[in-house]
Image (cartoon, rainbow, N blue to C red):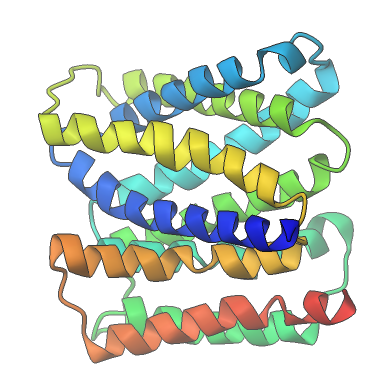
Length: 285
């Protein structure tokens, strides 16, 4: 029964994250990228700190170092994602971000020398085809927004890799809190570096960033951590890849985004690549 509730929890996370692509697009109408990230991670840090205040009194240096690595990767993922969203559509942004799952086995191979399964290679090839259909222009060039989103996927891939390694050794509450604090610090630095210190936020922008900070970040990361105690990493990765599907659905329903047959084919191939790349691990388990 716990596994069923945990799976339902992860599905809820994908629905909320899918809505996050639309919320980010709406927030960008009145806020700059690093303004959104600063508010988002600040809200998440305060809420996570309040939720785990007892455990955080015993935080140690190893947990801090691990959390900083996770937070740096998380910041890179969100930074390239939200900057890329200024130059591409929310649906493309969602599906290209989902490629992080395909990248994880290759990162593990480079850092830990873990063997790459044949299904991971097949998934990578399919992902390249899907990206080509989804993003390449008629002259076979990749748009700026789509290229930035691919870098964002790499950032999230490193965050997933670091999380899977560190969560076995250290407390999830401490890791999550330091991760969010690191993302806040890097967002504030970027805020000043790129001259985004003047805030002119609309009501819609404020509500959107509130959703991103409280629901899409603080609540979702806590729910994801709790759910993954009862769902193995492979099944969790496959479930979480559905975020891209909900991102596209919300883009069509709320933003009335126009979807072409070519985009649908690219999205289907990318989603299939994400699932296939995890089949080897599922078979072993």
